[in-house]
Image (cartoon, rainbow, N blue to C red):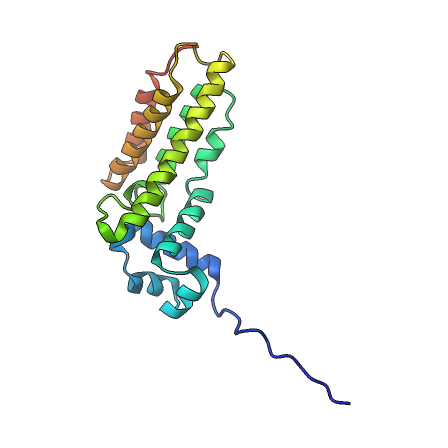
Length: 202
């Protein structure tokens, strides 16, 4: 009786994909989309270009995967903030999360979603478009939550949910830019606190 064994379908990965994605996130976060070369990325990830393309696709696809990871990791404060019981607590948690995420020890200062493509040219257009959509989605989620607050009487009837969402996002983005410029966590929390003094009364 002859025993036949099937050969494995392809070679198993010789690297931890999650760890490689985490390292790619740090490179994009620190250097932006265009500033991050394929050499920088593959060196940080500890893999070859061929392995990167096989596991993650091209640079643009890798960036999109990194943005998803960033949303679920360092930027997860945004989704958690939306669950707060009042609109003011949503805004407070959102801005406090922004301060914390943009000044985390061991991570690049600022926000991947803001700094990622501020100076993008044509070659970074896809990344810039992805980040614009990412920020617009965040604002839309805030607007929806603030509209819910108006409907429930948590915000006054004359409150403008779109304006409040844009206000919170603008302050949050400004916090990220200031963090990248060296502002401390304490200084940025003072900015967040000052911004909330203008919050509409119930």
